[in-house]
Image (cartoon, rainbow, N blue to C red; front, side, top):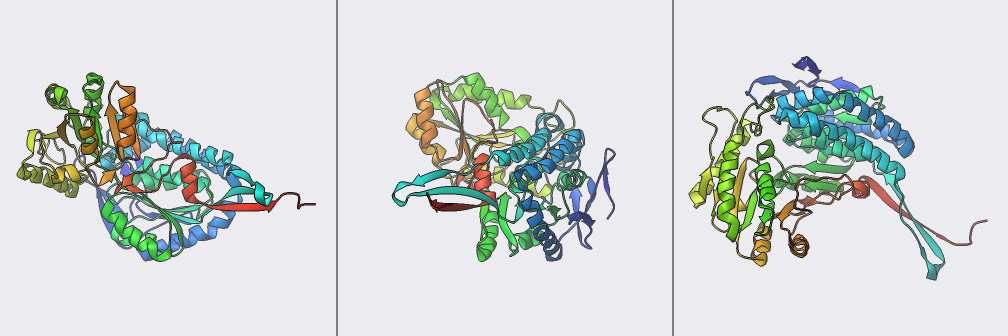
Length: 487
């Protein structure tokens, strides 16, 4: 298959299996959301490529596992170093492929990829299982972590490289081997990751990439009997299919499935701080799983904040994500644009009041959708219940703390929540009461890799991050021995 070239950077469109590039007869198109130009044709994998990758990973597993955390850490640190050297290339390719802001990718997002790999390599080296005595039995217990085996990793298109390394890092550090399935709408930086793994000297079969459509390559991967762990980030509907396939082999799963997160502003909050964070929810054209898309504002300050939101949103610069002045870029794909606009049109039909936005930019056209805000959506409206994953926010008001909590929890999701108040006791009460895996108070998107990451309700199953990643990617074994029985 012909290489894809972006700004002089060469990217293979083919799979990476057992240390080699492998082409498929079938392909799919990859387009840039910036101008909908064709970037290239990507090999479309099937069960044959999945079988080959799973076999390579299974054969490489014993040797990779036997290296131990320190031995694996040598390779993973080299991989982190390669990523750091290629941050600029990664930023250019990912912006072209998925429309994310180039400045953000260059300055923050791609550097996190190296940090993810290095952090989990170092964590594995220090990981110690718990130990304790059982006095009545005169016995001692020790928990040890063992690699689980072949791991299937499926990543989304909104931050494909960073989120791949978030999974690849702990999976490899734990001693597992990996088959990565990149997103079909933005596969290119995951292909570069395969090149980086080869450059870092990872043994063949330890890290594999199978490109393809979810219903074909993805379905074959999650149903494969040789896979011992599945980590997926994406939609609830896809997770339900993966869960059903995994259940047939009793394969453990970790799911992060997005959200409909509340951003709660009390009247005593620092309103300037709250406003800046409200506008930040339009980041990456709203294509962020953690975004606080439901603005909940105490009614005594709601009119003031609404006017300031309208002014602020009107000042957001929508445009080419390669321009450093751009603040909101395009949506990822024509199909996704249709989906986002469908939510907007149905919200209008259901009686929500459109304050601004709600259309493709008349100046830019294409996939550039204006930042959008609804107020007063009727209770139970679709726009309050389902994840839009676009630059679309709603604003509701509340009278008191109890109503704020009730509104915050009135959704099937429970990934994240953000609270603004200067009352510490209230912050603690509300944070405890909201059903979410992550809660930020007077800040947003502060991430520490030691934190447990995951959601409640339909926002997912399980947690990853720090120790929790190794609880998932490892098999835990308890060893018990009696005291005073060894010579």
